[in-house]
Image (cartoon, rainbow, N blue to C red; front, side):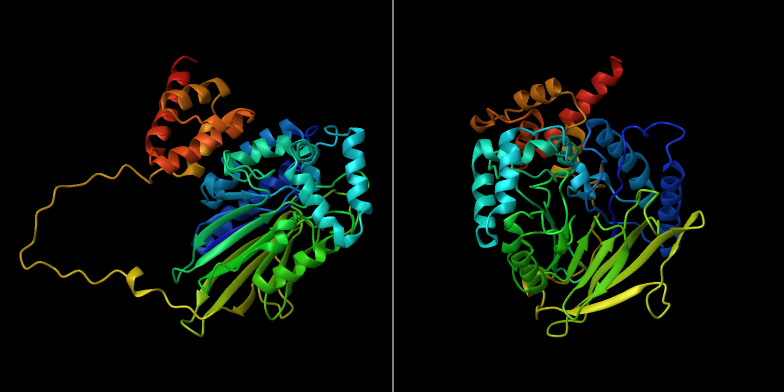
Length: 434
């Protein structure tokens, strides 16, 4: 599988849609380089991973611009479908004008001052309580509305809407085993006093399960371990379970291999220009399995791209190779015989079959979510009602949460195709009526 990894885009409201946007040329260079890399490597990007700080100040208009850039520029250049984008929040995705009540300020100080061995329990209690969890997550509401299009919203666990405190998605690797991608939230406690050892990662990050010998893990978090007050249990678990660790926040391009895992910092696509050693960057990462049975290894190949002298160039490894390559031992596993298609015996006399017309890929929850959330809330409600996709637990959900709950019900009922068609019809009707 091929991933494009970037971070710290920092779309700033004051610069957007203006000819003097200082990063307009930089983004153009990046899109041109992605398009060139896809052509040179003769393979499109399967998944785009964005490890936080999409916005600069967590403003709605910053996410509107980010969505257009991802959908209209980055995805076409990379060959990746919009529904195959995975995002997590960073500290710049927090709207600091929201939730600055005395209650929230007090909660931040309480959590930061709590003895370390009690910190995770305290955060869990805040996340489980309805009013307290609102205080923790209200400041990333603009982010969540944006991330919901990719089914990457994070918040208090809710069975109805499907919201989780983290992002998780499975992909099939070349030997039919699974790569499980995790995205964790490290901005539960975030303000102008952010500094190393003052942030907190969602405690569930320290509880990831192996999932079986056929599952390899990739973990993504905006803040590196040294920024997290409750880092130790998270780091211990991740280093034991996950083969690939992706981070953002620190604006340096760096690959740190170990015997058991590879750790990658994305650098920043749009760092502040007055930062020392200003060098924007992004990564392309190939992950696949080589060997079989007891000799399986996860092979990781990284193209580290860095902006210098007006264009993106390869940042070579310590031996001057243009790619960084690592392997890590995997658990013994063989694809079950039942999962392998048996040879089909050819009939002696050719059979004449009626031509079957394929209309394209079937819709998925992710592809439907991307389209559904393009509609106005009133149109979403009308479709949900017409297909009887509402539920008793929807009361109190925000509009986009109700839409996601309906999409998940459609998936469970096997009516995603009908929902997808209804969305298309509504969009066509709206376009026809201006």
